[in-house]
Length: 266
Image (cartoon, rainbow, N blue to C red):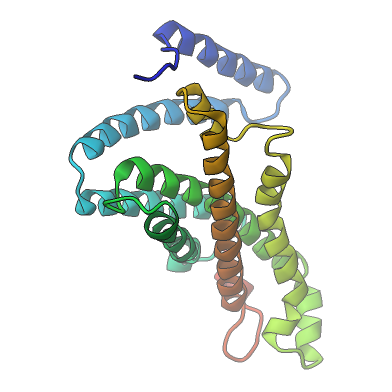
């Protein structure tokens, strides 16, 4: 039996009141985030309550088909969030496809590798391991890809003259945008690098904290957290690199011309 302390509706209400207070304070300061904070809090509550019910059913009736369906829904939601956070996103299916394809390649491959080779559980798709691991990988990879793509498209828009000048000098599309591509990948990787650097000193990561609260031995929790951090770094890194490469290629046509008309925004 878990030793974790149960939370009452009153406990959650106190935390919710603090979020409302922050939203009111934001409104008072004209930050323009009050409404977004309230909506985000409501989404968090509804989404987590629903996922709790879904996970209860999935944990009871373990089947690869249900796990796969849930994983695809998580991937589609993450792809939509990547697209919606872009200031200047790609028009058409590219807006959704670049981030989604990159996450599917990196996160799914890393998750399956971890489940079948590193953790080595049976069955390998056991939902108690597969769903939380995939969720953490998708969430962090989504952040890296979103930041990287936003930096890529915004920089290409702002530095249009510089890029076209290089093209006129005979640079290929890849060389003309190489610096921006490098900066974009670096931006996407900064959050996970910061998270790994601060782990154990500034912060106790979520999975480790959850295991300790559940009564597991601290060293066992530490081992799992190290594994998760490394897997997240790999998934985020390769996912961001893939997304930035595909995105930068999309910014040019076959004749090496910069095509900013493929982006939305002004």
